Length: 254
Image 1 (cartoon, rainbow, N blue to C red):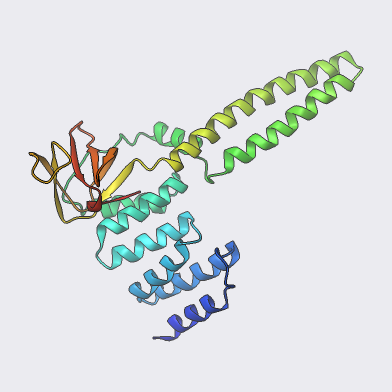
Image 2: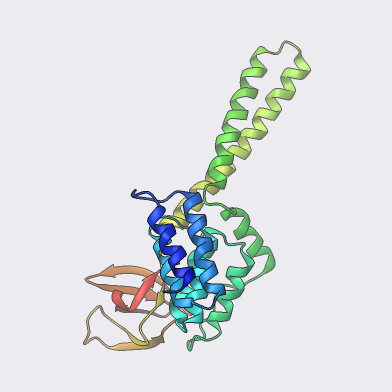
C-alpha cells in the first residue's frame, strides 16, 4: 500500500460510522481518489471512488469512475458510468466527450439519437445542471406568486394593483413550466430504461428462453433500451427497431 492509499484509508477511517457520508466528506474522498488516479494507481483510484458511490453521487464522481475503468481497459463499465454522469448533468462536456471516446471502441456501431445543437440545448434546459434545479425554482416561483397575489389585494393604487396581478399571472405560468420540467426530470432519473451490455458477446432471442431463436448479436459496450423484464430476461430494443430478449445478467442498467 503506497502513501496515497494509506491517506485514503485514513480518510475513510475518520469518517463517522453513519449510513451515509456528508457532501464535504464525499468531496474530500473524491479528491483523494482523484490523486490516486493522477499518480497512475488506477485500480486504487477505482476502489476508492466506488467506496464513495454507495452513499453519494455526482457528475464529477461518475466521470472519475468512468475514467478509471477506461484506463483499466474495461470499456463497458466506463461507458456505464459516463452515461450515469450524463443523467445527472446532460450538459457536462467532459462526460460527453469521454463517453464518445469509449463508444468509438465498441464493436457494435449502433446509431444514437441525432445530436443536433438545438435538440441538445433543449434537453440540457429541461434537465438542468442539478437534479433538483427545477423543483427549487418551482418553490421560489410559488412563493413569489403568492406574495404578488397578496400584494394585489392590499395595494390601493389601481395601476400598481394591475401590475401586481400581471406579474402574478406571469409567475404562475413560469411555475407551471417549472413543475412540468421538475416532474420530467424526476421521471428521467427514476426510470432506468436503458442499459449497457456487459457480456463479451450475447444473442438476443425471440423469446425469454435459452433455446429460443436467436435474432441478432450484441457485444460488450452496446447501449440498448430496456422495454420489459420477465423471469431474469430483459426485452431490449435497438435504435433501428429490432427487438429481442437477453438475460438480465448480461447487462447493467444505466
